[in-house]
Length: 446
Image 1 (cartoon, rainbow, N blue to C red):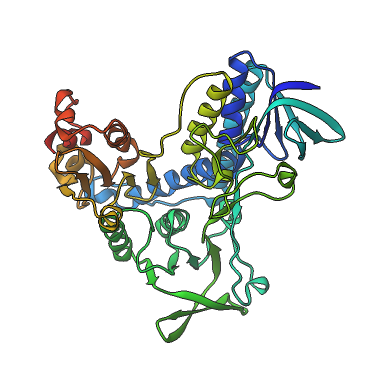
Image 2: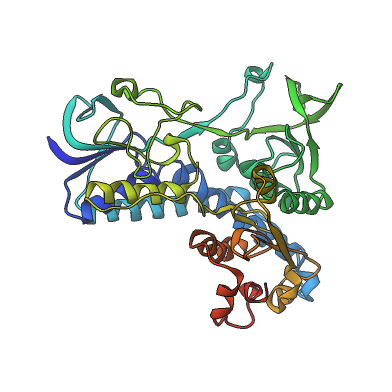
């Protein structure tokens, strides 16, 4: 069987590339060993946001008196939350499959193996291709903590399917995944402890914004142990003992459950990648150019596999550019304005440079900061809640970075992304008429 494009991996990069290529009239085969949609749709972005919305709704009902609303006896049903999460995933997976069918993509369910740059083997069949796009994604990192093999730890996948509320939860890793699960479980009344090796949570996010979010969750009872390294784990009848070191001191606390969220790494084993003799970066990631082309002609690496930006929306854009390159279009990938979002309550969103990055690079900048309470809409909907908008500009007022704390940061950050990507200045915001009242109006006041 011969195809113009063969794609390994059916996550956001893979199914986007397949649909785009198929709609352009190319013959396409897509290999996926599990469920179409990849980690993001099946056990990542969508499931977590479904559960986070439920926990936020519960928390809003619990605190409805702030708005002079009596909600009566408020409760939640975790098994039903999990069931709804699974229903949402199934619905969206079917939607992706329908799009692929509409684009005339051949979907092969099975483990693909690369024979060479133009040959893929799957389930005993040989598939020939003119172009090969690799989109194998990433997997959870399991740190080599002494005793970890003897304790019943959770990965994000286990936490998403858990149907019983633990009394207490220790989360190793204060990154995006760790903080989103801290948000979910703390909203449901679980005593949460977050252990982070760095001296602040959300490494890579603007430090001031991260600090404000941490302070907010600390007020709600989440315990943060920063600059702390877990040195060993021990299981007992009631839970587990978590031993951590901070400075020269070793301390211990007990938790019923343990969630690992120390990061993810690209999937590079088990599908014949070694048969391509690809060039790698100093960080041992597959080397790609602005068109996502590897060192082997006709072979592309998109999404988490290339290690540039382990985010679903980055993967989607990379896939689009890879296919456009195959179609002969002159395009290139820009990573200047890739937004990052933490779907906690409140949300955090960031795009472009942080203050820490600019200081390290020796770039002169100015920080323009507004409290979210400058927005009438924000005040009306967020009783007793603070937030911040921080915009970093150079000496010509060109926008270098935008950082937000407060809902709906995830929806507003695209405005900042446009400014960063197109290298616009603050005056550009004032050319547009924003609806009133909205939180987005704050951009006009910068």
